Length: 264
Image (cartoon, rainbow, N blue to C red; front, top):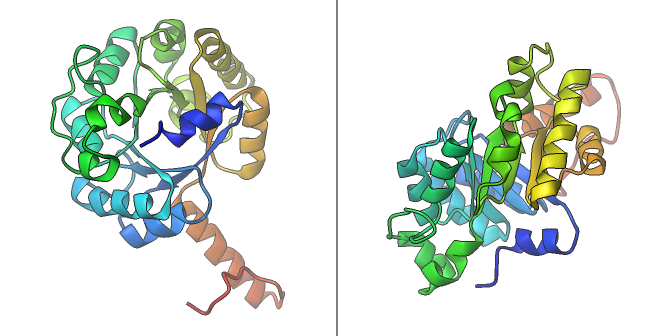
């Protein structure tokens, strides 16, 4: 298998548009993966799914042609390795606050001598080939979440960890940690300045800056700022917004509501 397609996008100077699944359903994951996202991330931290539900969702994402990724519940090697063995090609790890914590995370994603990942790519070998450990395993993406004031203070040390693909900003926790009342698409000056600091550190060390956005408008602003991976809302939020818009349109007598080309 070729290198992770997301790496190709970044090597060509592009940006990645990432989908997000919080609904525990392979059908929902397949719909998301076929919507045109470059990658789709399963949220095992705040989403409603566990490993048993994530496995068929990873299968659906693979079959639909998007790059499968997962946000793990915590910086715990067991679940990181298990999701990689199941076929995830990228891991987003929450609450990474120091270089030591980042080294622990990255090490769990890499085989020796670069890390301490245990060998047993059960499904990954089936999907990506028998030489997985020599080729595709090195293409696994590692994103440490920078989402606290402590992580912000240590961002230079975090992004300098060998084997780290990039950082992923959790704007809600970062805003909360910095005393901002905002939780999504932050505009508070101190938080905006923090985003600039994170992007600058990523550029300096040659890693990717990623961020979770609540709207397409904000995502475009973040791309202009230098973020090279943007997530837009989640399957649940997008479903709720589309459903609400359709109901409001009909109750208001407005034509031209959303259509997918079929009644079901």
